[in-house]
Amino acid sequence: MTEFGLIDSIARMCETLPANGWEGIGDDCAVLPLGDEALVVSADMLAEGVHFLRHAAAAREIGRKSLAVNLSVVAAMGARPGATVLSLSLPQDAMDGWIEEFMAGYTELSAEHGVALVGGDTTASAAGITVNVTVFGRTPLANIKRRSAAVAGDIVAVAGRLGASGAGLRDILNGECDTPAAHAHMNPEAQIDEGIWLGGRAEVHAMMDVSDGVASDIRHIMERSGVGADIELEKVPADADLRTALCAGEDYKLLLTVAADGFAAVAAGFETRFGRPLYPIGSTTADAGVLRWLRDGRPTAEEFRGFVHY
Ligand code: ADP
Ligand code: MG
Image 1 (spheres, protein in one colour):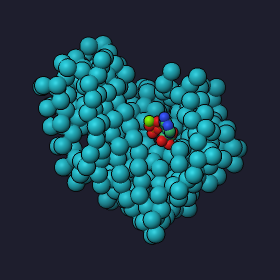
Image 2: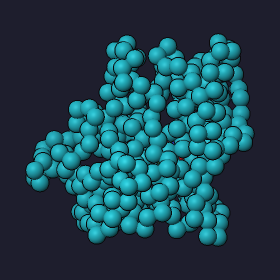
Image 3: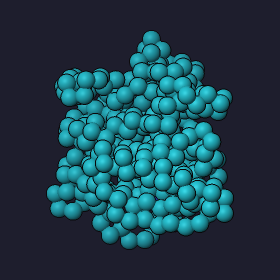
């Protein structure tokens, strides 16, 4: 079974459970509307050997990264992260220096974004370090950006450049841990302020963060919104070869769709606010489920697939 097959079957098994007001599985965060506001919640796990190699990464960087990926999904809903709950499964040999350094990184980034740590769990581990972060955020309900809100004819955009993280992972696996790309892989710059800002723009329809690569993640917006997408390959802002930029993932940049007649205003506002462009890379179409890769406006036979666990 694939990762998404498993998540689908879990979702099916839970269908008969009460929702209790929550919007459940399938978006970056679960959402609980509370009057004019919404609470958003998500959990993300990092496992030694899967997400990081202990010899290749400083514990402090893993501390930052485990938080950054969680802040990223809250911002991808258009919400502001407020607090986290941190659960640690630690082998004996991680109990001294490693965890102290990890917490230094974790609290450092928490402070940078004004996020509290309000609980968690700590257990022994028979093999390897596992870190789970649960994050809570809030926003005016009207600002929530769901994967399901894209409309045919929207502009598809990314809020940052892609591929550095994938190139960095390749460097690390080649034993080169000191390259700029390796640094980018270990220190993803989640677009937290950008997500909160984009949440306030009504022209922005769907939004998510790119964890598995645009090639994989655009399909989540397509599926949940019932649209297709045309991606123009020459417009993808790539900091590596195109395949790495589209498929490797872990860049944690925001992927969004914007009403076509509102895109120019949003892009101009974004550039004024952040000093960086919003990159249009294509558009959504009425051909539900059909993803096309275009070069010079024509479909190519090239196929791009993002990262999938299992
Ligand atoms: P991401 O790539 O952003 O981490 P995932 O692909 O892990 O997102 O998850 C997709 C959706 O499935 C999310 O809404 C997530 O909350 C949900 N999900 C993932 N794993 C589980 C699980 N074991 N039980 C319930 N929901 C899950
Ligand atoms: Mg996940």
